[in-house]
Length: 294
Image (cartoon, rainbow, N blue to C red; front, side, top):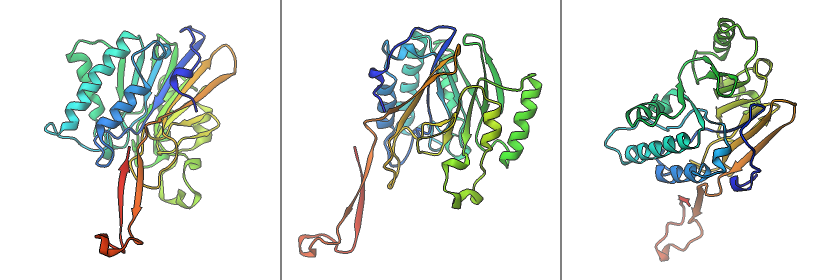
């Protein structure tokens, strides 16, 4: 785990790619303040020369936690952050791609990034995907497959759509896959029968470099399948490190760097047990209180 400022810098070249990926920021969450999460994202992607080394930023779904209304304070905070983020990536010449995540979380609100980019005339290189799609990015000379969560009722049906999309684009393989969902290695075996899981062998076979997957909030790696986990913590019993993933892909060889960049400011949910406190001091003897601690 490294701090972004400790990463070695490289020049942007046609033979190498540096991509930062994060997901599951859950803006608008009821337990972890949106202002805190936006501060974390800003500090992990600052407007400086280190961030400028990135060729691409990928947001792999669940940028939002719930359907937000215009009157809510979080909406103003989010739109201000979006405008600042768009101006930064435009200034630093960084490509941004955003995937729709779980429908009950995102509600297609990530499109605000596209609307603000147009309304403010920022002209950042940003696109949003809410269907199974393959995009050729000429600036990077790569093909990217995008797969939102719950696109079809079953992952097998989604896989069939992926096969049809590959065929329509006259491809058998893409360079990168960005998806929101789960693979077997991310869940306990006892939970496999309750979840729609993607086939790792299939997606590894059709992806030349890396698969970025959001949805499960824990960092994990299975071969070339990478999950950054959530940007922050949103509940109790989640003590794993939070953050983002950065890959440095050397296209002229088979050696690539994978770096997990930890969010050192991640919220901590602490349970305070009152069971052993004397009732005469004004505390309940049989109870507990849970509070987030930042």
